[in-house]
Image 1: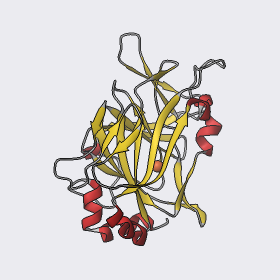
Image 2: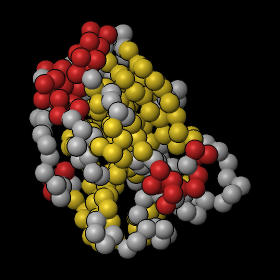
Image 3: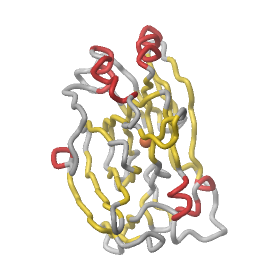
Image 4: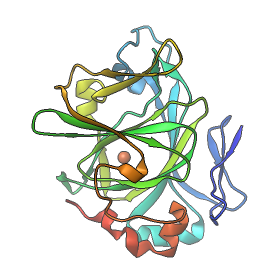
Amino acid sequence: MIVDLSFTDSAFKVRYDTKSNRLVSEKDLLIQENAVRMLSDMDTLFRDLKPDFKDEPLYYMINGVCYPEHKEIFDKSNLKYEYTVLLPKLIAGEYLKAHGHIHYVKACPDKGMMEMMEVIHGKGYFLLFLPGDNGFDVTIVKVKRGDRFIVPKQYYHLTINVGDEPFIFSDIISQSTGGDYSLLKQKRGAPLLVFKDNAGGIRYDWNKNYPPIEKISVCDVNTLPYKQAFTIEGPLYDSFISDPGKFEILNEPY
Ligand SMILES: [Fe+2]
């Protein structure tokens, strides 16, 4: 299957081939990295997975993507554009999810950084969570194509594919940030696990390796429980190219 990743009002025309798991473009395209996350990379994060599981790809990450003529704008801005493609699968009854992480500043690891997201294809959730005084605040953002929002620097975050097609999103993030995966490794996943129930619906389960959830919010991008540092109107790639200065805040450590 070929999935069109472009928005009609975008000059950035890219498609995704679900057979080769590669981007397809009529024009020259720079791609810094094609990476895959295998089940064996995060098998301890699926609670009911048996030890004799068969290894398989879970999701693909395509990083540092741009037309050659825009490379300088990205590099001068110290930002990069990325895609993530989560396959439609159940893993031991759980909807396929990304590992989850929080962003830190490479030169100053106790500081965090923000990330701007854009939902492109499929049906998925963003699971955001942050430590509170007595437990964790958990937010489930139910997203749809064209949703654009910022993940604040305090929030751990991951995505979950709850549909039957690839769930695809893009992001813009600082070239100076790294992902810290340690809490999720230590706790074997996020505070909330999302399973398919016997009737084909969605069932949430608490990950008992965490203290109790202090607060849980289910929202969409219009009812996020935090204020966004800035918003954009049009497609992410084009918004950045037309006004890179607006995205400078993504380089600011907090
Ligand atoms: Fe991230």
